[in-house]
Image 1 (spheres, rainbow, N blue to C red):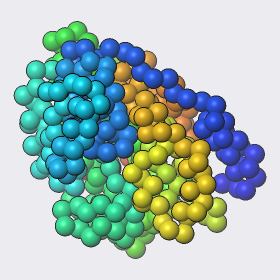
Image 2: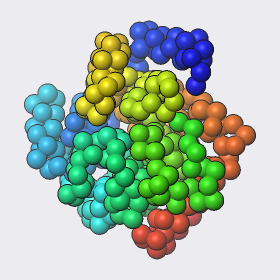
Image 3: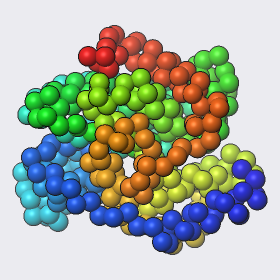
Length: 360
């Protein structure tokens, strides 16, 4: 991005969105519904879960790696909403494929499942420990056969999506509804390699300060390709996506500010703690314009309750928006096909036959 583009296009759009656009509060009733929100012990995930409880959901499951923090979030939601017995805390560690499988086995016992919001993930400087891995993913660390950010933000995210899809489809059939699967998802050079994921897992090529944004971009490609190959009329589930990221890294001489205000916008959340110290003064200035966590969480709830017209679409500020040029431009379809083809192969290696659910 050039300085001219930054000053004439990106910054004006950012200031307009932050100052004059406020996503409306969701009002769609969730009465009778069962909803899963991952990464729900704090930040936007917790606020989205709170909103689902306020909207009358029968059951809201918080998928959390840290059960203690999950229980604290549950108590906070119960106190603020006055509704007890609605929220449950289930352990989910996206750094462990076995944990994902156990989570889904438990979900199979639910009477129904109407919405899944996949909000969990780690950023490139995550300050999160994965099963004993040092809490600094600005360094290349392998987890589950891939670089840790790719495992958590991409592979496990879609492993969970495909494993839980039959339960959503079962609900569609029994209830006569269309359940939702929402994934909360800058140029990346690995797309030019013969194998994208092999390049991403090569420590000598890894640009870890870009890794979070790349992982979220991979989610966008994968979501779009699944939706292209499997329309909602066949899948019986609405798959949509929105993006949650912050400007953690200098990919050029300019901080890539475009990553700050992708939906749900610049918000107060736990992600600010991951910003490198050298950029915190700049971040603190922009945070003066930040939305509250509650306002940002409205976009997650809107996506989870949106209709089939959002299948395969990117949602921002509660509206369908166009994706970046890399995604929708001339190069996009081929990169999209390759990303899903390679990711599908990885998922088949973890759980043979998993892709058959898409054609069930």
